[in-house]
Length: 530
Image 1 (cartoon, one colour):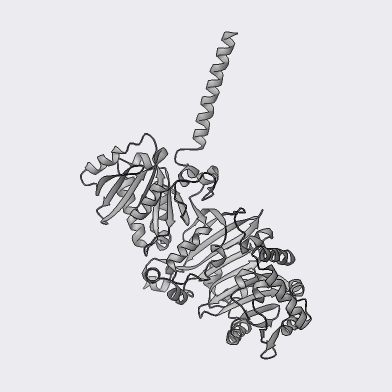
Image 2: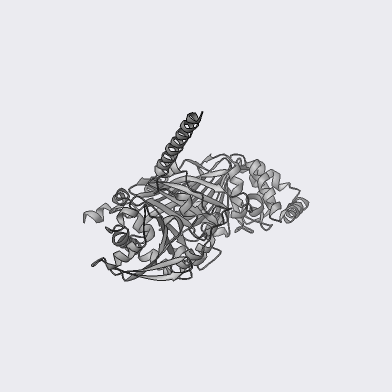
């Protein structure tokens, strides 16, 4: 009996050993995404994750993509730091193959702060940094400072004459930044275990991905407040109010940054306008085909069930505390015109509606309807007509109550109907301009470079944001703070190197499958040949 018990214990111990080894191999030390990301301060807007191995750097060697996004000088500083520190003979064995997380944080300066977080493999001892400091020609001078959690390392990178600050956290996790302000935040930061600042990809998906991008949409507002003069800018407005977290994987293309994955709604937060579209089915996007060639940026909404959307919008208005105000407005319209405007408009509403801003700062709402000839008498009854085709609404905030938050900028707009499209604008002259665009087919969809960009996008979505960087330049000059616009205008490569960017949300199980794309401008072959 004793022999049987001993044999059983040996077999059990062997099984446990095999299981530990097996799962350790499934989760190699370089992939501890959740554990590492919990140490990143929760004011991070986005985190870019990649593996610190030669293949990754070889793929992007000579490419404009990353330097255009991060800035040539900033990327060069990071590369110098990598070569002198992580890739040094003393440290290479501990950091090669580890995942690196670069997070973006708002700051009190005219620059965006970057925090680099990673792990060290094996039995890493911090005295190695002291030994590195003692090596001749290391290109680094390293001094130590005692802080709240231990030692902080002040690394002077001589080649760029900048200080890089490093701290060591639990479980061989290291954080570093060129910003002393940010490293101090990282020192003091403690994660609340009951909430997820970011939702990491599953380990298997992570290990098969070249790079990943994590986004906390709620942190877009403080980031935009730092970048823009005007806090009410409508660029990316609907996304800034979205309580959601995204985990996206990079699909490599030599002339485009393309990420896709899920944006997970945080339903324990207050519902945003975009929540309404998570309850729909993805729709083929056609409305963008009639956007003006001068489009600077746009946001398009698509619904598979307009009636369901309208019902959800009414509930959203009630939760926002404006349900009574809305009911009073439609009761007034009924008393003065005899129209049950809301149900009649909802019956005619099509599957897509959009807000478009042009390079001349014109703003249009373009709404597809089922029958423009039936909608016209409804619009005429609630408007003062300036001619047979154009009228101005007699009532405030109708677009907001009929279509939602994105249309609040059209308080008492002018309207016209072209075929089965209702077009709204703030002035009659803008409608004249769009009529010329429509009749003469001056659409962005007629431009070859736009179509090359559009070919990279998903066919179906429920929410889609688009920005053309060249057409947006005058608006960005007006709205961006001077240092950020100067970087936009002068950096080469820089954001001006991109033709456009787009972010698409397609509803999936009350969340959104997300596609993000930025494509470089076409190469001027004539200039290259000369």
